[in-house]
Length: 195
Image (cartoon, rainbow, N blue to C red; front, side):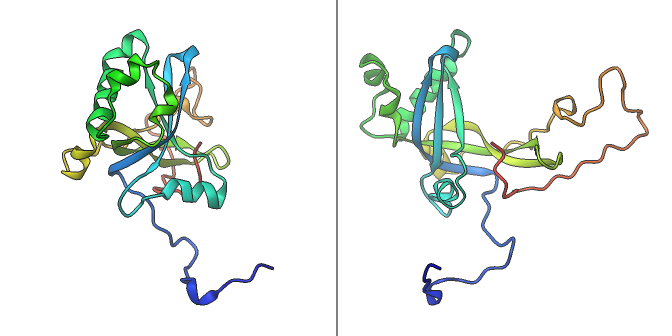
């Protein structure tokens, strides 16, 4: 058995750990990958600053959970939003120029290590093991880092799961009667990794 210096370990009870809450965070892009077939960037991230700095990397190291990610599409319909994302990177990272990045071939790896402001909101999902409805945090919006530091953001309402998207949902041909209660169990801040 590995030797542990117990004088340096703080005792905790089961279920005692800090959980991120909806709000504004400064993120670091850990890994940017171009998914050319889908015309989008897949951006893995971690929290860069504050009380939860390194939160996801710690969970990755401790539990082997994948780092969370968000997607930014550069398809024809999303070009304006993608340009907004690039401008937010520009405003958040002195010395980075998205125009120079684009002109030089737009290598996704050049985005690794850059910071971005993000508003994290809660989203419901169905736990595949238990079938229960739970909540997790997702990137709802990206913005300049300065907006997060100055509190210039609003936290969105919980994004509800469409009942038709759950395994336990009734078939459309057999609607649930209006009087029948729908039982769900929402467990905020679940420790289980939803992805």
